[in-house]
Image (cartoon, rainbow, N blue to C red; front, side, top):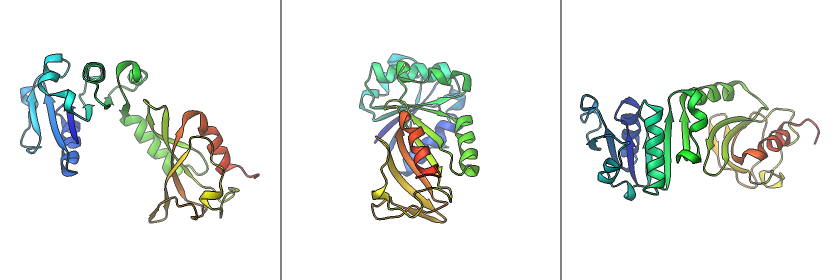
Length: 221
């Protein structure tokens, strides 16, 4: 997979290194010569230029990349880069960093953003996930498909404790991804049962979240 990252700061470099270690090809675009820390990610390609300029993205061959990541510290730059990537180069997937939470509402289809990553929101979700039992916690939003990655820890009084995954009538569009049970990560096979304390990860449409929460948390089945 070929990935182009705008922003060669700590965030961009960290993402680039992770992707390279997973076998992907990465090009980092950085507008400041002082921030061109090639030695930190020597296996990445580097381009000293402004990622908000159409000519820069042409030079970066954005039309050949699979994912464009806008990871600068400037929300305006991230939005412009995402919009150009999607509208001018038809990049299949765009990921953009949200720096100011008050700007998060802009990070959607109208600005070419498929996935918006907001550190404050993720941290808050992880705190909720750690303490909430029986409550649905939204971890991530896939804006392009209007679906969410959510987590629910099954309470002891759930009507579905002990039932097989395949016997539960899941709400429309809901997909069970994985079951986290103590120190195990389990696949949601049809014959596997749901147990109290299981952490279930789902991909679900937004309009099915309430039904999913009610299904597993209701005391009356």
